[in-house]
Amino acid sequence: MQKATAPHSTKKLSVYFITSVAALGGLLFGYDTGVISGAQLFLVKTFSLNPQQQELAVSAVLIGAIIGAIVAGKVNDAFGRKRTLLLLAVIFTLGALLTAVSPNYTLFLIFRAIVGLGIGAAASVVPVYISEMAPFQMRGKLVTFNQLAITIGIAVSYWVDLAFAHAGMGWPPMFATAAIPGLLLFLGMLMSPETPRWYASRGRWVEARQVLERIEGADPEFEIAEIHTSLSVEQHQGRIRDLFTPGVRMALLVGVGLAVFQQFVGINTVIYYAPTIFQSAGVSSASSAILATSVVGVVNVLATIVALLLLDKAGRRVLLISGCIGMIIGLALLGAIFATGAGNAGLLTLLALMIYIISFAISMGPVFWLMSAEVFPTSVRGAGASVCSFSNWVANFIVSVTFLSLIGGIGTAHTFWLYAVIGVAALIFCWYLVPETKGKTLEQIEAYWNNGRRWIKPSTLSKARLKPTP
Image (cartoon, rainbow, N blue to C red; front, top):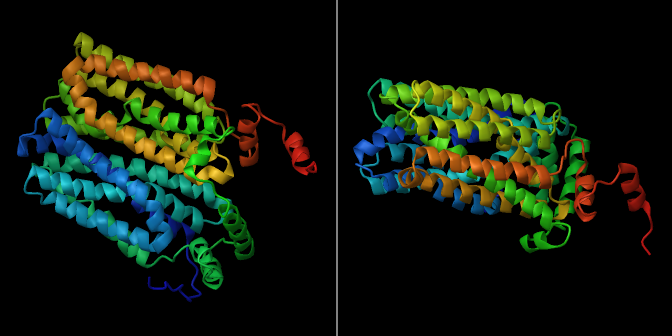
């Protein structure tokens, strides 16, 4: 492998510029998952798709995402964060252009799966790059910006779908537009450095310090010391089988449970199929259905901003429980609307979906990703987060590939009621099993699991650490 070189320029780098560039990967994640929502209305006509083929057209990207999530870690560590993001930029850009010129259904599926590789990898690579470039006092705020970028990408995809649908240009330009942020990501990463932590992991401490000295607001001495500590901890990282040891099994159950419930409450039936849902509710034209979907996308962004402000104030468990209640209400209302054939069904569907999406965006949306890293002891944190991410992508695929089949088998109303029942199960799960980790150190959370799911006072924990071993 060619040795990467650190830049020797003394010009300071803005951490906001670096974060914004990397977050384009998150925006592309959101855009390429959301764009299928409006595009499928036209794909069905172009390729004469039946419901099962339509489900596969929607879900093909998730097949690639599962693979991308599996291989991303090794590629990220072997080639570095910068090179991996440059590779993802190429995948996103070429994937967008190839999808737009797909001459048949089979090639469309292949090209969407290629884009999925980028999505699955970006889900982990982008937060890692941002966290390793951000000064310690800004790390939490800057990493959560990636979650916001994903929701912005989804919202942008809806409005782009609307613009091209209104112009009568069909689905190809909807996918091709993703090449623009893909190219910007590539150019931006060319101007951005490799992370100091990756240099340090390769024993290249001089280059690591040079990067830190160029970042505005960074404290090179403190950051170098922190990197030394984290690398020392990672030498003792556990394997996946260590997740099944006593004291860790419950943490694994909570992490994987949140991963699965986040998808099984049906969120991606809204992200991927909202225009189809609106048309089922009586919204006749494709443009009107996509317009209603675009409103939902904007609400999703605004609710996510609120959630990021509340995470460290209201607490994770409070948001999860209140969000589950809101989702149950929204899903039950959707089922009732379709069961009764209510008048003004389009408007009522929009209101019910807004209740649902706001509830999800302040709860399961951001809280799962945060807690999947928080709940695990340090020695198995990487393995635990990886298992949770994989479980989430698989659950995402299962939901998206079965939605239209469920509607055809049990009806639209009963499908949403089924998701509402799963929401009740999620509420019970969160109420009885998910701990409140707000204000708790990672050490306290680890002690919570080892102490039979009972919190230990910080003073008691400190004494236990100081007590000599017999």
